[in-house]
Length: 93
Image (cartoon, rainbow, N blue to C red):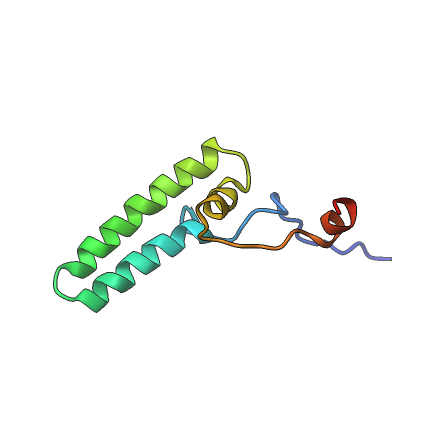
């Protein structure tokens, strides 16, 4: 019987990365550049720069706070709404 080799990722629950940014951080760069393209002219460079700065700030916030902090912060501001998980609905009447 031959033993088959399989790739086992080092970080199983890690988010996909583009360069050194995680996917949710890279979204800021894409949106900033996209808005800059819509504005036109030097807006593309300026929008990309703003996107990179926002991605850096978002990454620093993710590192210093607990997981899910931004989701809860957005919920407290009324930006993001979500329903409790099904098991929470059963535990808390």
